[in-house]
Every structure is written in C-alpha cells, then in structure tokens.
Image (tube, rainbow, N blue to C red; front, side, top):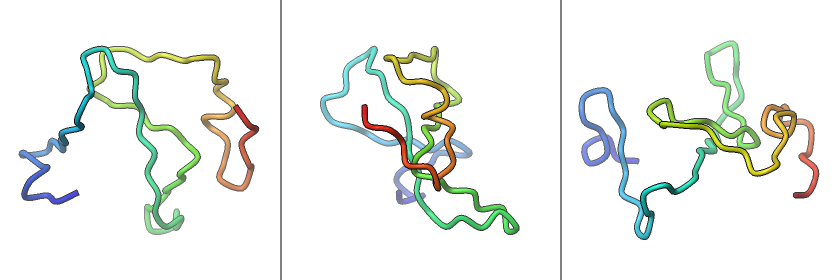
Length: 76
C-alpha cells in the first residue's frame, strides 16, 4: 500500500469495490519471519481490525486461526 495515498496520520485505509456495510472480513499479512528483529509475519493467521465493531466466526476454530506457519491448516 502506498503511504501517500493510503495513510492519514496513523491510520491506514483502502477502498475495496463492491464491499457493503456489514461485510465480514479479516486480514492476512505475509512477509519475513524474523522475531529477533520484530518481524513476525505469518500468512496463516487472520488478523482482526482494531477498529472493527465486532468479531464473527463461521465455524472456524481458534486453533486454525492461531496455528503457527509450520502447521498446515486442515481443509475447510
């Protein structure tokens, strides 16, 4: 994401076409895994929006969401 276009002060934002109010979503972020330098990216984990109004689960267990990258998540 481009900080000039997608950041206002400390807030990141993006426009997603066709998203309607009430849409259920989460974030997955991928990058290097280097905890010694503060980088703990894990694309298998779902990140919540800190400004979200609620949390929803459609039968997904917390273990699948929190499993480390080395564990392959079971099929849905």
